[in-house]
Amino acid sequence: MNIREGNSELMEKIQKLKRERNAIILVHNYQIAEVHDIADYMGDSLGLSRIASGTDADVIVFCGVRFMAETASILCPDRIVLMPDINAGCPMANMITADRLRALKREHPKAQVLSYVNTSAEVKAEADICCTSTNAIEIVKSLKDVEEIIFVPDKYLSYYVSTKANHRFIPWNGYCPTHVRILPEDILRQKKAHPEALVLVHPECTPPVIQLADEALSTEGMCKYARASNASEIIVGTEIGLLYRLQKENPEKKFYPASEQAICPSMKLTTLEKVLWCLEDMRYEVKVPEEIRLKAKKAVDRMLQ
Ligand code: 13P
Ligand code: SF4
Image 1 (cartoon, rainbow, N blue to C red):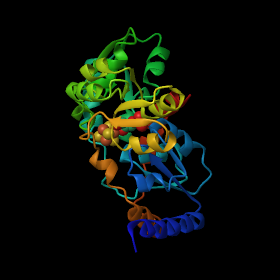
Image 2: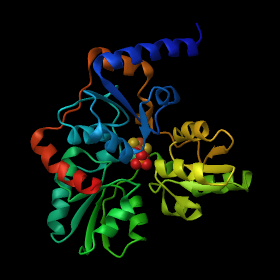
Image 3: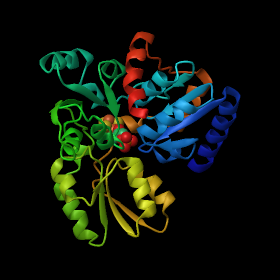
C-alpha cells in the first residue's frame, strides 16, 4: 500500500467518525497538506473563530495552535473543543503572561490594552479588545478617543499598525520565531530570481522585510489577493504551509516561499493519525475556566463586532 492509499483509508475513517460525533474540522492555513485535505473550513485565525462561533456541531476539532482552540472555547462554551496535539502551542503567545501584562497596565493606567489573538485566554481576560492580523488596523482606527495603546505581544505587528494610526503605542517585546526567520536578503534573492513576481508578506515579519514587500497581509488576505491579482508569480513571505492552499486555489499561478526556513514547528505537529485518534478518544479537550472565559469573551466579542 502506498502513502496515498494509506491516507485515503485514514481520511475515510475520519469522515465516518466525524459524522457519528457531529463534529467539524477547522484547519489553519499553516497546517500540513494532508490536514488541509480533510478540512470542513480552512482559514486564518479570524475566519476560523467566526466559523466556531456560528457552528451547530457538537464537537470542534481545531487543527491549529492552542490559542485558536481556546478562542473557540471562549466563544462556544457548550461545545467540545478538541486539539489533535495538545503540545501545539504558539511560542509568541507564550512570550507574555497575565501577571506581566497586569504590571504593564499599572505603569500605564490610561492606556487601552489591545491584545493580538495570539495570546492565552488569561491574557485576553486582561485586554480591552482583541485583534488579528486581518483586522488590526481597522480595530485601532475604531479606538478614536484613545491616546495610548498597550499592544501585546508582537512588537513587529505593533510597529506596523502604529505606522497606520496616530495613537501612541506601548509594545510588548514579543515576536514570532517563524516570521523573523524571513530576512531582507531572502526577499532580495527571490526578487532577483523572479523579477516579475509580486511580494506579499505577513505583518509579523520585521520592518525591513515589510519595506521590501508590495503588500503586508494576513494569511486570508494573501489568499484573496492572489485570487484577484493579475500577477502570475508571487513571492510569499509567511509560514510555508500557506503555499499548498495558494497553489491549489490558483493552479495557473506560481508561488515561491520567501524563505524555506519559515516553518512553524507547532503548526506541523497535527497529523491525520492524530486527528483520527482525537475523534476516537475525544481528546485533548481545551476548556477555558468560566471566570477567565467571561472576561476574555468581552475582548473577543468587541473585536468580532
Ligand atoms: P493569521 O491570523 O494570518 O491566520 O495568522 C496567525 C498566525 O499565527 C500567524 O503566524
Ligand atoms: Fe505562533 Fe508564529 Fe507559529 Fe503563528 S507562525 S503560530 S505566530 S509561532
